Structure formats: structure tokens, C-alpha cells
View (cartoon, rainbow, N blue to C red):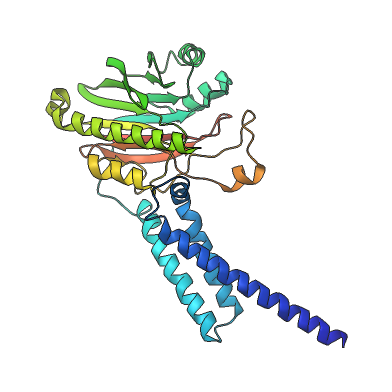
Length: 340
């Protein structure tokens, strides 16, 4: 009797697990396909976790294989899981495959780093920047104090410094800055400058759209991205300096969205800009543990998504792209080696 009770209990547990597995399979399918159509808050935010939907589909497929291939329900579930693996892989694998805009050589190394407005560990931040050895560093969420602290600590490496009048944006550069300025749109401010790089002028635009943590901010982020899209299009098409110099342009910063967002897709399709990650991997840049932000431990351990970006015009090649130490920020540094 005791043995039968144990067998019955194990059978019940197995059936419960199977039901949960099928439920998880259905949920993964809904999320994997649904995010192609969801544009409103908060459903659009679910598109940022495409990698996790792939991992879930792989895990479900493995679990169904372990269960047994007997029974049409299990086989159907396995086929659906494998289909979801293939479907989600279409959005992930291109980031790891060779790309035509990859190149060899070295012209300049650019980096973008959201240091977090509450992070005042200037020595650690400066050391992290030095380890990357950038020619140009754009700093997000930088106060006037941050600008001066980094200017003094990095004067030998990056002597040319400018901070935008809004948006918390600072640039430090080894190359002279030509016409650095701030430009304010309805939904945010950008830092713009030309860089004189070995007799070549490059147009750089740095931006930090707001975090979409509620509907009004979600609309503001999307509005800012739309404004930036139009502005970048205008610069590539009409700017006389950019036209003369083969339209070299770098657009970078903390965009607060991943490459799987429909709003990111609109930006890329409209401007034709190239994400420097392509061919080098996804390289997630957020979220990292930091003393001044209080995310749950499981979140900082598991949630890793690419929301910081470096985009370049088609005349520029990319030799490398990586992330680096966070220096007590909740973001990692993102850097790229670019070739003219």
C-alpha cells in the first residue's frame, strides 16, 4: 500500500509538472509572437526579453525530450517548442554572425557610459574609462560635478570636454571638438559635436531618452526617438559638412530600449544606421549591481539586456564592440572600435 501511494504521488506530481510545462510553452509562444504587434505600454516593454524567450523555449524542448516522446500531446508540444526555438533564434543569431560592416584596422575607439546620477565614485569611474582607453567617451547622467571630476582625472587622456546644457550629457575626447552644442527637442536634449579625427570630421550625436516606467514617460521616450530619427535623417541628407565627408555619423547613448523594440526598428529603418554590436554578440549593458540602486538580487543576477547603443553610418566599419566594468553603476560601459 505504501509503495502504491508513493507511485500515485509521483504520478500526480509528474502530471502537474507536465501541465505547468504546457502552460509555460503556451505563455512563451504568446510572448514570442505577441511582442511583434504590441506597441502600447506596458506590453511593449516585454519585447526587451527576447533572449529569455529563446532560453525558455530551449528549456521546454529539453524537458519534453526527457519526459518521453510517447503520446501525440508530448510530440506536439516538442514540435511547438522547437518551432519557438527556431523563431526566437531568428532575432538573436544575427548578432553573432559576421556582418558586412565589420572591418579591420583602427581609426577611433568610442564609448558610452551611463554612470548613474547618484554614483559619485569619481576615481572608480575614471579608472574604468582609462582601462577602456577610448578616444571619445560620452557620459550619461553626468552632473556639473561629474563633468569637473572626470575632466580633472582624465585631462591627460581626454583633454577636450563639453557638457550639454540639458540631458546630463558630457563628452570627453582626445580629438578636438568642433562646434559642440546642445539641441533641445520637445521631449529631450541631445549633445552634438563634430570630431576632428586625423583630418576627418565625424558628426557625433549623444542622447538619453527617458526611462519608460509609466505611460507618460513611455510616450515621451517614443516621442524623443521619433524626433531624433527625423533629425538624424536630416543631418545625413542635408548637412553640408556631413555630405562632403561621406555622411560619417555616430549616434550613441542610453536609449532605454533593446534592438527588439518596434521603436528601435523604426529608428534603424528610417536612418539606415548600423548597430556596432552586429557580428560581436548582444553584449548586454544593463542591469548591474550597484550600492546606490536597490534592485532585488535576483534581478541584477538574471536580467541582462542591451539598452545602450552605438550606431554608425554606412561609411564606417566596426572592428570590435564590447562592454566593460560598471564602476558601481547599474550600466556597463559599451565601446566600439571604428574604422573609416
